[in-house]
Image (cartoon, rainbow, N blue to C red):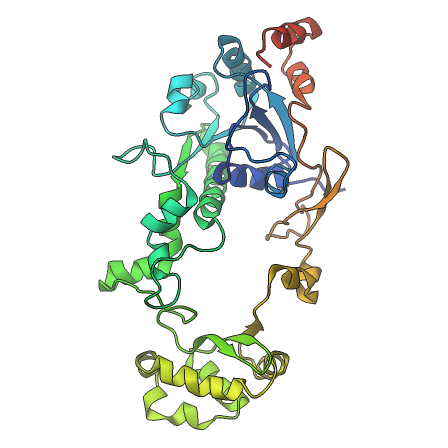
Length: 392
């Protein structure tokens, strides 16, 4: 019998919105015991939490238990600190000053549990002139340079169609937490792991950022073309469009032969990568003059046979209907708290012995409060007292 690889981890989840929950979801899906800490209904609601029964909330918070706890009260903080004593990880994505005001910052918690790994995501970083500002995904897309290179030339700034700064910050924090847990095995000590939407977005700029840092070039919008490698882009077909990536010399030769245009390979204006970049529009027009004569599927088959990377452009329903996607099991099912069977977005990493598993859907608010408090050593009478005081 296999068990999830993180089954021994106890994680306290203080996150909301998207970036923080994305990080915690990585831990939960691989087996960690994640306790999502939420405001008691008598105290208020988290306006950034999303509609609980909606697709977004259900996708973000599967595989967790829910505890209601008022961290603004002394009693609530006392309960939290008792949980921290046994925790491996705490994750939060408040504005940087909030955790200090609540008295639940890394220094305060590590004093009671030196082995604690404390993960933080903010909009702009824990320090610096913008650290106190509210930061959301599209703000980071703009400041991180992504919107300046997205879209058609001359179109003006365009956001990416997914919250890429949120998601990449979450994935980066999860990786940082795992690195800190691995290091803890050697040192016996936890540490504070932090990232921000802005840092994650800049890191995601990767080759475009390196292009500026090393060559001084400021990338511009290139539409569906690759910024430097040509031909790479979208080409119309008889019944739609196809993506082709054939910039390397061997791939370019194969593509020219496959589309019935071997002369393009020997053409002096397209002879090497530099020439192809300078004459990109002309070359694209020559390629599209051929691709428009046959169907998308025809060219996918022909180019695949030639070993040239190519593929269709799907709407999301077509993505999940594709036989290759079906074989990847990217839409596992979970049972929601109200009994509904839902399909959620699966993990992109597969492991041979200890796979991720959808153990449960997003819990009802406070569904595990009594259970978690009993595990922390509270008696039935003490739990009732906490409820009566509005602490939980």
